[in-house]
Amino acid sequence: MTRKIWFVAAALGLAVAGPVMAQSGAVAAAMSAGTVGEQADGYLGIAGTVGADVRSEVESINIKRRAAYTQLAGQRGVTVQDMAAATACQTLTRLKQGQAYRIGAGAWQTKGAGAISLPSYCATAG
View: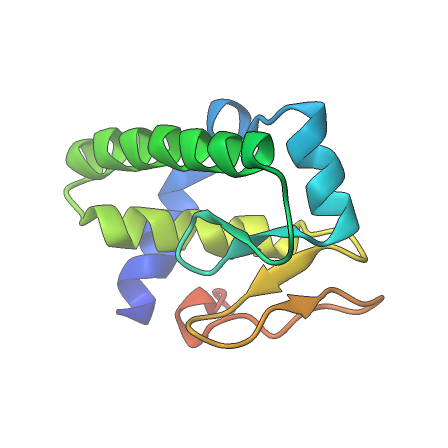
């Protein structure tokens, strides 16, 4: 699966970054506060206590992400899960210090000053 994810990630570039990653000020603030974070499955997750408005917007963003992943997966002949994971590999590398993230079913973590340990399927070429 690692080779497939790398191929999809390379082909993906930043094609879904803009429309799929867009969020309101409330979600951006929750991400900065570490109560909403990125997950290794390509979707946002609730990492702490948030209001109903933020929770609803996270769900809406995830629906849009799923639609984008589905469209791109069909174009590239891969699964939606592989498309989402490839996007997550890129998204996780762009986290800012203090933002929350979760790898697999593990506990939520907060990005420190250094790089985070990515899932094994995010292996890079070279």
